[in-house]
Image 1: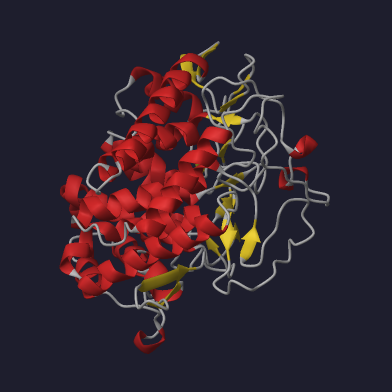
Image 2: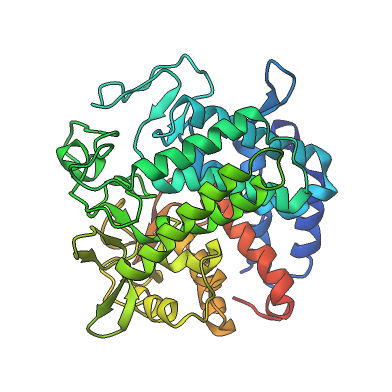
Length: 453
């Protein structure tokens, strides 16, 4: 019996924002997808950030201001907000209102970083006090959580560069934004410090509770030696890192620093700051090559997930982006790179302690939810970084089956039963699934037009 596929989007008048360009893309792409359930999922998921998470208006100076919640958590993460709106960038030239909305995200992120470059999540109301006020760190009003994650700062750079590449517009990049970039570069540089050096304890954090992943040891995390890499006490999952230097986040930093240098050179008087970004990118790239590639007994030379600069490394991959699987997606090297290919083989195998197989599917998970839970986001990245149509079809088939009748992607689902899932409203997972379908419609149009998944 054919499933009843009614739209799961909010009624038109209840949507936070509607983009004519996105609506046209949904109609055009859906019309070329042979599988009706896949087309239905795409139509629900691509606009989910715009439909449900956007609070847009203007600041006191009349400039665009856009606050983006994650979904079921009423706060704005720097990382999530970039990823939630990223799939809309190709449509900005067709939709001036959407372009203004994304400019507002850049301006809001700028304000957040200036408030606290070590915070990962913020409130719209700058006077609101967090439930995490008892965390042993420097909590300020307006900050929801202060887990320092290198990729959060990289996400701010990435959105700015992506917006400019899509539009050619330099309007958002004013004095406040320059100050934001200076803080980003300063913070990444300080976090290159080794144990015992000045700046090593610039950021400290501790949280009381029963979940060890919610905090870091010693307030500064496990020890690290200066090696050119930049520390990140917390991962993109908001879990504490095992070792201080994450390779994927540092790789993302290399890409974003190179891109921001190009953008800075287009702004008057910013050559010196551009040179600083370029120098930092070279340092980190060189150190990834030296410390981040290790030998696995089965797969040979692969990227480590985390290292400490003393010679220790941790081999795994986590579903949250940036991860090692996502390196080509983020622009760090090509899919064909031999080290990446060997790393990918490791990640998509049971040698990765967070790769799970079950009756409902197979894919990468992570310690944030725990053993046995597969993340749709990781399946999306697997498909995006694949050159095999067979593998892409396999991933799409699991993604189609894992929504458990809701019409949306979730944070994770149990490997043997997709009805056991976490986070029914997780906008990033929805929007990145939409990004995948848009990508496939351009690169493999015949795949969507002919295949039933």
